[in-house]
Amino acid sequence: MDHIIEPSPIKKSQNYDFAVIIPAYNEEATIHNIATRALDISSLVIVVDDGSIDNTINNIEDLPVILLKNEFNSGKAATLWKGIQAAREYDVEYIITLDGDGQHAPEDIPKLLSKVEEKPGHIIIGARLADKSVIPAKRYYANKIANFWLAWAAGYPISDSQSGFRVYPNALFDDLEMPTSKRDGFVFESEILIKAAQRDIKSTAVAIPAVYAENARPSHFRGVRDITLITLMVARSLISRGFYPQGLYRSCIKPMLFP
Image 1 (tube, rainbow, N blue to C red):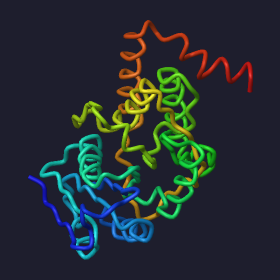
Image 2 (image 1 turned 90 degrees about the vertical axis):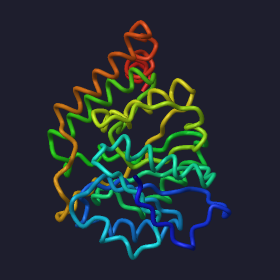
Image 3 (image 1 turned 45 degrees about the horizontal axis):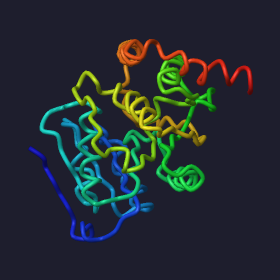
Image 4 (image 1 turned 30 degrees about the horizontal axis):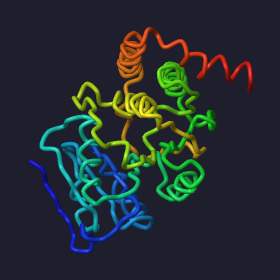
């Protein structure tokens, strides 16, 4: 059952251009700071706690956010999906997701939204891979591998397929079905790029700093396991479309021939 706190300033009768969703699992060290900074950008901030066993919830109960809670740890996919469905109840035009561990600066939200004006209807991704020097090597190369496979399946180059800092058009989720099992936790954000491309919705990258807070907990992303699951998901997608040679040409070969 959900634990829901909805402060009086947030009313569904009001019009909001966008909502900010922050998935959180054992983020007691960083969540108050991130949520507070997000509230400086938007009055509609939704924190979805994924069954934390620390003080994550206690640390934000004083903030005017919408707080949803998974009774059990359900994984990032289910947590994001719950937040997305809650945001859609407010009839927002865009849905912004960012992590609660401090890797994403809420102050960069306007930078992503400014790209929306240039690329309306696109998914806007805060891309960190340009700042290679501060990213752990294993994480960097795992992301590059994922980028190759996902770009092939989506049919266009993708700069940072694993970044959870995104702006989604609300319309993308109309009649969209997504797997949300715990096993699909880090597959969700990859698969949604493929399904969006099949709806003629592409993503556009905006460069952001790669931030690794000293007090943040270790990443929940398990490189070998999660990249393997992502690769298997992509392989199933490619096999179902005869390996989609057009996608390989558009995402990899064409950019090399015509940079």
